[in-house]
Amino acid sequence: MKLNGYERFVTTIKKQQPDKLPIWELIIDRPVIESLYGNISFLDFIEKEDLDGFTIFEDNKKELISGITYKDEWNIIWKLEPNNIYYPFNGPIKSYKDLKGFVLPDADASYLYQSLEEAVKRFKGEKAITFITHETFEFSHYLLGGMDKLFINYITAPDMVKELSGIIWEYKSKVIKNALEAGADIIVTGDDYAGRLGPMMSPEHFREFILPYLKKAVDLTHSLGAYHIKHTDGNLWKIMDDIVGTGTDVLDPIEPIAGMDIGDVKEKYGNRICLAGNIDVTAILPRGSKEEIIEAVKETIAKASPGGGHIMASSNSIHPGVKPENYKTMVETTRKYGIYPIDTDLIEKYRNKNYIEKYY
Image: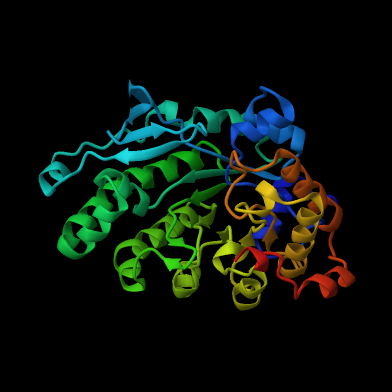
């Protein structure tokens, strides 16, 4: 039975076997879109590529301060880098006094959801509409002016960090509710917890300061009748039981360069969680040959797709450094080999390979 993108996505999230492997990305940056199709809209790109799901962001406002420096509604300072991506540079909270005087932005502001409303009008019921927001970890270090400051405060001012998290969650929980009311199908929370070698904080600090709000995000999303995707890069093995234990529906992106072999994750957790990923975006998609892309996709399908419960995606996002033709090869190869039931010869040939090994 032929499914549409939404049906395919939801069937897969339920860890059932669809007609073919769904394709999705957390982010597809403008340089890749424009290289492939010129100056078209993001939603036009989704239609041309016939992706099964796609991600919408809040329509935040950034006010130009000077040069490449901007300020947003949170009074977080951002810098626009040459790759046309904003990065947080400084935050408004330097002390407990600043926290006490901090005023949250308006999570009910209608402009935040304009892109989502356009996506719902165009694709509701046809493609899976995922909406990305956060729990509290990333905005904690944005507001404090750096991750180093947040980690110092874990030791020196834990109560302040917890109070800050509660304030951020007041906003983020409203965003989740508003996005789902506006028609989003799935909530993604995008706080990154880890690097290539492991979590950026101790497992104990993760459980004390971060995990409670991941659990809140999952529970709130489920209570509103929707699915939850947890996005975090890096080597997660030390906190995998904690993440999976929250009941999140999907883990993205299972980063291979960080030692997260998707076959190992599937074997250990595939009966509890759907997996999204994990074609490498550090070496393969930016610099690999067409043959290398094809081999990586075949291996990923062989390891993660049998029986369902796998959404094809990159190991982070289709960032400006990705070769557009490599992204196209990834999508085309997925469509060719991601037909259910997955070919048994493909599984046998590729399930024990490790394409990323030479890049460690």
